[in-house]
Length: 148
Image 1 (tube, rainbow, N blue to C red):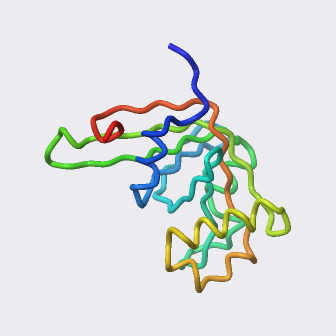
Image 2 (image 1 turned 45 degrees about the vertical axis):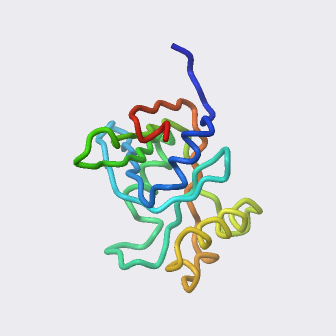
Protein backbone atom coordinates (compact mmCIF):
# COMPACT_ATOMS: atom_id res chain seq x y z
CA UNK A 1 0.00 0.00 0.00
CA UNK A 2 1.40 3.38 -0.96
CA UNK A 3 1.56 6.37 1.36
CA UNK A 4 -0.52 9.00 -0.41
CA UNK A 5 -0.30 12.64 0.61
CA UNK A 6 -2.62 14.12 -2.02
CA UNK A 7 -6.32 13.70 -2.63
CA UNK A 8 -7.86 12.27 -5.77
CA UNK A 9 -10.39 14.32 -7.70
CA UNK A 10 -13.20 12.19 -6.23
CA UNK A 11 -11.89 12.71 -2.70
CA UNK A 12 -11.60 16.46 -3.27
CA UNK A 13 -15.20 16.57 -4.49
CA UNK A 14 -16.27 14.61 -1.39
CA UNK A 15 -14.40 17.07 0.88
CA UNK A 16 -16.18 20.01 -0.72
CA UNK A 17 -19.62 18.36 -0.34
CA UNK A 18 -19.26 17.83 3.41
CA UNK A 19 -19.77 20.60 5.97
CA UNK A 20 -17.94 19.41 9.09
CA UNK A 21 -15.02 17.25 10.14
CA UNK A 22 -13.57 15.84 13.34
CA UNK A 23 -10.11 16.99 14.39
CA UNK A 24 -8.08 14.65 16.57
CA UNK A 25 -5.08 15.90 18.52
CA UNK A 26 -3.09 14.43 21.38
CA UNK A 27 -1.27 15.95 24.31
CA UNK A 28 2.36 15.30 25.26
CA UNK A 29 1.35 12.07 27.03
CA UNK A 30 -0.63 10.83 24.01
CA UNK A 31 -4.08 11.48 25.50
CA UNK A 32 -6.47 11.98 22.57
CA UNK A 33 -8.83 14.91 22.08
CA UNK A 34 -11.42 14.96 19.28
CA UNK A 35 -13.69 17.86 18.34
CA UNK A 36 -15.94 18.78 15.43
CA UNK A 37 -14.59 21.59 13.23
CA UNK A 38 -15.48 23.63 10.19
CA UNK A 39 -12.80 23.56 7.51
CA UNK A 40 -11.72 24.69 4.08
CA UNK A 41 -9.44 22.84 1.67
CA UNK A 42 -7.21 24.77 -0.73
CA UNK A 43 -6.13 21.77 -2.78
CA UNK A 44 -3.13 20.92 -0.64
CA UNK A 45 -3.87 22.03 2.93
CA UNK A 46 -6.86 21.98 5.28
CA UNK A 47 -7.67 25.07 7.36
CA UNK A 48 -9.82 25.41 10.45
CA UNK A 49 -10.23 28.70 12.31
CA UNK A 50 -10.16 29.65 15.94
CA UNK A 51 -13.38 31.59 15.71
CA UNK A 52 -15.66 33.71 17.89
CA UNK A 53 -18.08 30.96 18.91
CA UNK A 54 -18.37 31.01 22.70
CA UNK A 55 -15.56 29.17 24.46
CA UNK A 56 -14.72 28.64 28.12
CA UNK A 57 -11.08 29.69 27.68
CA UNK A 58 -9.05 32.03 25.47
CA UNK A 59 -8.08 30.69 22.04
CA UNK A 60 -4.46 30.22 23.10
CA UNK A 61 -5.62 27.97 25.96
CA UNK A 62 -7.84 25.69 23.86
CA UNK A 63 -6.83 22.07 24.22
CA UNK A 64 -6.36 21.62 20.47
CA UNK A 65 -3.98 24.61 20.39
CA UNK A 66 -2.00 23.37 23.39
CA UNK A 67 -1.86 19.87 21.90
CA UNK A 68 -0.64 21.03 18.50
CA UNK A 69 2.09 23.09 20.14
CA UNK A 70 3.57 19.96 21.77
CA UNK A 71 2.54 17.30 19.24
CA UNK A 72 1.76 18.61 15.74
CA UNK A 73 0.68 15.22 14.38
CA UNK A 74 -3.10 15.32 13.94
CA UNK A 75 -5.90 13.47 12.20
CA UNK A 76 -8.89 14.93 10.41
CA UNK A 77 -11.89 12.74 9.59
CA UNK A 78 -14.45 13.90 7.05
CA UNK A 79 -17.33 11.47 6.78
CA UNK A 80 -20.79 10.97 5.40
CA UNK A 81 -23.33 8.78 7.13
CA UNK A 82 -26.60 7.63 5.63
CA UNK A 83 -29.03 4.93 6.68
CA UNK A 84 -28.62 3.71 3.10
CA UNK A 85 -25.18 2.22 3.55
CA UNK A 86 -24.50 2.43 -0.17
CA UNK A 87 -23.95 6.17 0.48
CA UNK A 88 -21.38 5.85 3.29
CA UNK A 89 -17.89 7.24 3.02
CA UNK A 90 -15.01 8.74 4.91
CA UNK A 91 -11.69 10.40 4.34
CA UNK A 92 -8.97 10.18 6.97
CA UNK A 93 -6.24 12.78 6.74
CA UNK A 94 -3.22 12.26 8.95
CA UNK A 95 -1.09 15.33 8.90
CA UNK A 96 1.15 17.95 10.39
CA UNK A 97 -0.61 20.93 11.97
CA UNK A 98 0.69 24.45 12.49
CA UNK A 99 -0.89 27.59 13.83
CA UNK A 100 -0.92 30.34 11.22
CA UNK A 101 -0.61 33.79 12.77
CA UNK A 102 -2.88 36.52 11.40
CA UNK A 103 0.09 38.22 9.71
CA UNK A 104 1.00 35.08 7.72
CA UNK A 105 0.03 35.57 4.03
CA UNK A 106 -1.58 32.10 3.96
CA UNK A 107 -3.91 33.21 6.75
CA UNK A 108 -5.71 35.73 4.52
CA UNK A 109 -6.03 33.20 1.69
CA UNK A 110 -7.53 30.63 4.05
CA UNK A 111 -10.03 33.16 5.40
CA UNK A 112 -11.36 33.78 1.89
CA UNK A 113 -12.02 30.05 1.48
CA UNK A 114 -13.59 29.71 4.94
CA UNK A 115 -15.90 32.66 4.34
CA UNK A 116 -16.97 31.24 0.98
CA UNK A 117 -17.96 27.97 2.68
CA UNK A 118 -19.55 29.32 5.88
CA UNK A 119 -21.70 32.45 5.84
CA UNK A 120 -21.35 32.70 9.64
CA UNK A 121 -17.65 33.54 9.25
CA UNK A 122 -18.37 36.58 7.11
CA UNK A 123 -19.26 38.66 10.17
CA UNK A 124 -16.60 37.27 12.53
CA UNK A 125 -13.30 39.06 13.04
CA UNK A 126 -11.24 36.00 12.12
CA UNK A 127 -8.35 38.26 11.12
CA UNK A 128 -7.58 38.67 14.82
CA UNK A 129 -7.02 34.99 15.53
CA UNK A 130 -4.62 32.27 14.42
CA UNK A 131 -5.96 29.39 12.41
CA UNK A 132 -4.91 25.78 12.16
CA UNK A 133 -3.37 24.59 8.90
CA UNK A 134 -3.04 20.85 8.32
CA UNK A 135 -0.72 19.48 5.65
CA UNK A 136 -1.55 15.85 4.82
CA UNK A 137 1.16 13.26 5.41
CA UNK A 138 -1.14 10.28 4.76
CA UNK A 139 -4.54 10.05 3.05
CA UNK A 140 -6.97 7.14 3.38
CA UNK A 141 -10.51 6.94 2.06
CA UNK A 142 -13.29 4.40 1.96
CA UNK A 143 -16.83 4.05 0.78
CA UNK A 144 -19.21 4.41 -2.10
CA UNK A 145 -19.78 8.10 -1.32
CA UNK A 146 -16.15 8.86 -2.19
CA UNK A 147 -16.54 7.68 -5.78
CA UNK A 148 -19.83 9.42 -6.60
